[in-house]
Length: 573
Image 1 (cartoon, rainbow, N blue to C red):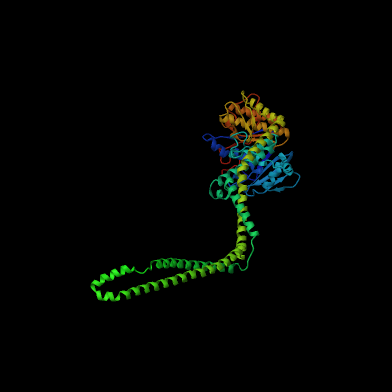
Image 2 (image 1 turned 135 degrees about the vertical axis):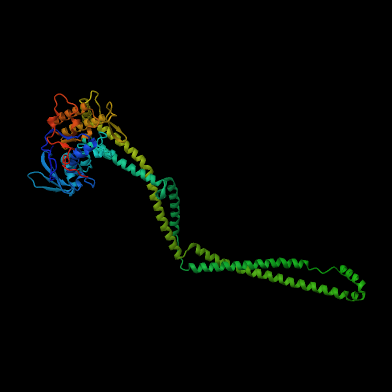
């Protein structure tokens, strides 16, 4: 329990010694002040924040304990920690340093992390679980159920101590507090984390640069198969490659031979054409018919009869001589062309034989630079194939992980169902405790159900009229009291429960006083401390026989009527 809270700030309201059981811190509301003004000014919510601050909460730049008015002052709390009176002190100006005294031992300095670890072990035995290789819920996650914070949205639903609390964190914390196998919830969160990563990878793989890096498994399988075949073929080429030092000279000689063969073939083509022309010319070289020639001269003889008749025999002889000489010339040219072709063919045969020898050598051997080039290509292709193989494996894993996670979810559901069966007494204890507490508040009692789903345990709190804000808040009250009952039996937890006045927003006056009486009775029964902060006018709207709230009200009351009436005795921020 908390015994005393004090501070070096002179204006801080000393609330006096707190006692076991119910303690009610009241704030007086002045006429004309709104509810929001009262809460901001009187400091009821600040009391809750102060307890969190002293028990390891973060103190970021927005923390009231970092303001100029409070930063240099030290806040202290005297409380029981595992049955030992302990004093903790901390200031906003030196938020990283927390000093703890357990009389008669000297003061010990902790960092915020060390202090939370120490509190986690003392209140919940968390360090022992970590030492055994487990990763239990954090102290801050568990403690927030016992001191709910309005700033975190803790009064929205029973199972969450903050609006931003993740499903995995909530499930692990409640499974732990209910005495169930919380490691199932931890493993479930691991599945969610993998699914989230998978979803991000799939989204990235479906478009953009990342998509081109990974790709689809089916496409990559085809590409990998083709490239592996190329690699195998290239490996064989490199293994059978023979380096020939004279490779380049032989390549030059082969090229020269090819050019010479082409030149000879071109020359043959020209001569073949000439042969055709010569043979055609020989066939057309026929002397004129004598009768035709005589008829012509007879015709001419009419004009020049004496001249023509005298020369006729001479002309005939001349024509025969010209035709004979022409045939002799054409025949000699034809034989010369055929001889040139024959000589070229002989030369071509020699050159072609040599070129064939060279090509055979070149085919079975290679140049050093060609071998090095092949080796370079082999290395490049090996790297490409390995990259493809890794991408293919990544794509297969990406596409196959979803099925694996579905199987894992089913396995966890079976584990959860088995755990509920094995721990049915503990689960029944929680369900019955919630129902009994609810029944003492309402004629139509609410209930708590815990479902085994493929997303882990789901907590529900069906209650008549549960849509109203007041009913929802009373569900939280019943839930918190149920937790206190279970923790008291297992001897874990801080030993106190603090409820901010926000818990009673929208609650009927009769239910408010009934809840306070019920809280007092349960706290006395289980020997824990129940601290409530309230507006004075809300606390006394109704009365109930056999229960006088004034017996539990702290002597020091807060007020918004004066500048120094709040918890810190000053206005700031």
